[in-house]
Structures are given as C-alpha cells and as structure tokens.
Amino acid sequence: MDSRNYGFTFEDESVFSRVRQDAPQPSASQLDDEFYVFVMGPYTAFDATYAYSDGDQLQSAFIDDPLFEPEKHITPDGHGSFKLALTDFCEALRDQFGVHAFLATDITIPTETEASDDEESMSVLDQSVAFAAVSDAVVFVFFGGWPYDRCWF
Image (cartoon, rainbow, N blue to C red; front, side, top):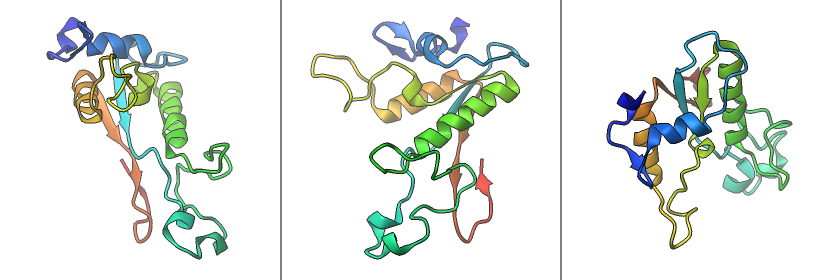
C-alpha cells in the first residue's frame, strides 16, 4: 500500500501510514479491508441563538437536518456539534459497508493551532488534501437547509 503516499509525509512518515494506523476499524469487513473513506463537513451546527437576537424563542435553535439530532449531537456546554453527527455517519459507513470511514480529527496529525511551538504540524488545508489523496473515496456532507429538501453527498 506504499503507492498511496503521493509524497505526503508527516514527521518523516507517510500520511497514509498515519491514516491506516489511526482510522477507526470497521466492525465487519464486507468490502476490501483496505478501502478508506475520508468524510468531510462542517464541525459546528448552525445555532440560531448566535445569529438572531430572538433565536431563543424558536422551538429549536438548530436547522432541521437529517443527520443532526439535537438530543444527541449537543455538547455538554450546550453547543451543537455537527462533528458528532459526522462521527455517527462514519460509524454507519463502517458498520454497513465495512470501510475505514474517518474524519480528519481521527488522525493524530496536529493542525497548526493544535500543535505546540516545538511540535510539527500540518495546516487544515494540507491535511484535507493529503487525506483526500490517500483515500479511496471522499465524502463531503452538508445540509442545504431551506429551501433545499435533502442532504447533499
């Protein structure tokens, strides 16, 4: 599988070796065990209370979204986390199709903002390009909201 490197390295190691090491394992392999799916999307859910002064008067501050469940994807501090919804989506891909579905945050390569001053890092853009390049498939998930009536993949 070294042919997946495409020149992307981190700390003198191929990015793909990090992906292979860190991507969550599928529970059952219905496909080739070497099929990697990089899942991308927003990590923060839209919250009307931040955007509108009267947003707290809505039945729900969150857009009706087929993946985002307010009762399940809210952080302990009350923020909507679309990242939690994407994590559930990756888990569903692993369970249903036996693929290594992963988010960028699953891979232990720190971004520039996460790294300490003396630690090597990769920019978010560089991570996205490298993870996409070494994956078999890339899925970008977002919900268009009104007036759109479906989730786009």
